[in-house]
Length: 302
Ligand SMILES: NC(=O)c1ccc[n+]([C@@H]2O[C@H](COP(=O)([O-])OP(=O)(O)OC[C@H]3O[C@@H](n4cnc5c(N)ncnc54)[C@H](OP(=O)(O)O)[C@@H]3O)[C@@H](O)[C@H]2O)c1
Image 1 (tube, rainbow, N blue to C red):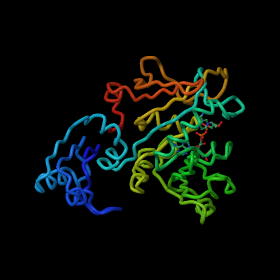
Image 2: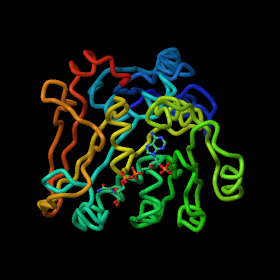
Image 3: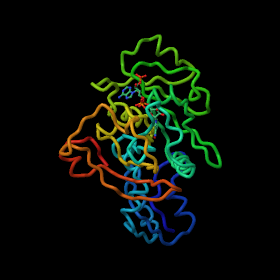
């Protein structure tokens, strides 16, 4: 048997996989990486060996760690793995001056994005995106999947007729502590209100992530708009960036980040990981540049 993660040792949604492997009569198990979950963490490898099964661990370990990165981050830190996806024009705009963003990217790229949404358990946008675009925030591929929808709002002003409140699945409205009771109550029966610590930008994103991790959100997809992108990027909270770059020029418009003035010397530096074509667009995967992260004491952990 060849597996990318050590089989589990404990009872969860299923009984321990390790026992099933032993009872099946398998003679050799090749495991890419140990499961850092303290409930397993090497115990299953030992149990397999004790049962007389040959065990090899560590084959293609780095690739397996990449594959399991969201789970590994969540299980070791309690924080969700944060992916940020933005559809941008070649001149870095996420919408026109009139706040029109439909559609910057191609149909193929939108399908890619829906497939990506299938792999996450939480999807987050800012209140303005809900007010302006009324998005569904679902993954619409062969089947429809509804990750937990999280909306950031400082004012609590979100139209209760928005689609996010009537679709299947869960909606969480994240607001700063101290938001008026009447506003909190306006979401009763429609969404859970998550009170988060305040910082100078509104909600303290680190505190929000801790609370989402406690709700078992292991992989959060941040989908915009500009103010939300800025809060996550500047705070150093993003584990993986996905830029869908369309061959369009929008001139004046809404930039990926706003309200931030940076010099070349203190630019937020990323490293490209991968680039792929998607119809007429490019999908660029990137991470923060590691040295820059360390130098600026960013909070990113993985
Ligand atoms: N191309 C893309 O990938 C893409 C994706 C999504 C959206 N868009 C476009 O982006 C535009 C909207 O962008 P935007 O910058 O105006 O708005 P936004 O980021 O969607 O929402 C901003 C609002 O979110 C809340 N918010 C953001 N950061 C917060 C924080 N740290 N703490 C508390 N609340 C916070 C505030 O809500 P309150 O006002 O309620 O206090 C704020 O006014 C739209 O035109 C949309 O079409 C483009």
